[in-house]
Length: 209
Ligand SMILES: C[S@@+](CC[C@H](N)C(=O)[O-])C[C@H]1O[C@@H](n2cnc3c(N)ncnc32)[C@H](O)[C@@H]1O
Image (tube, rainbow, N blue to C red):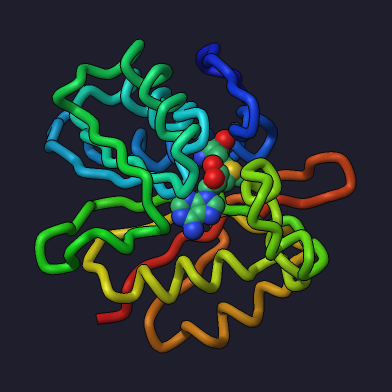
């Protein structure tokens, strides 16, 4: 685990923590393994950008990546702007306040890579449906832990992209989405990390053509 950069924090915005660093490390490994000598321009999209930490780190390391970041909470969009502008030139990123990829047109929006550290903690239905506290929305995954992952995959299947990555936990009902979306995607757990009593999982997802 490596803490690559320091970022500003804000109330009600998810601060970088173990799952953030886990997804960052996984993505750094992935981009390192691509042909870096080629320096092909890559377009990536982060859903649930939070503080902007993951994309700021990637933008700092890989000058050939351009970013679109979205978050459902406007405070996160504001904060990620402040953190990303320290490391990435303005013409390399755009940020939008939106629910998943809803405002995008699948005909024209076709990023190479999409990644999401979603709310994945098992919670009661009441916590999951809490609409008044943005910070609860950053981690509450409903009774299965996968409620937001299901919505994400439902949305993602309309888009053309090369590969996607998202985080879940070993405690979650992961087989529910693996079964429901097996016609749409190939799933592979490409990284795991033990954090205290929990094991975090990073799924790679590829569209079935
Ligand atoms: C676990 S936090 C991760 C934040 C940051 N990417 C990180 O790893 O530190 C999940 C983020 O997803 C956002 N989010 C939750 N549901 C969303 C949705 N439907 N559409 C877009 N963003 C969402 C939350 O506001 C929060 O910023």
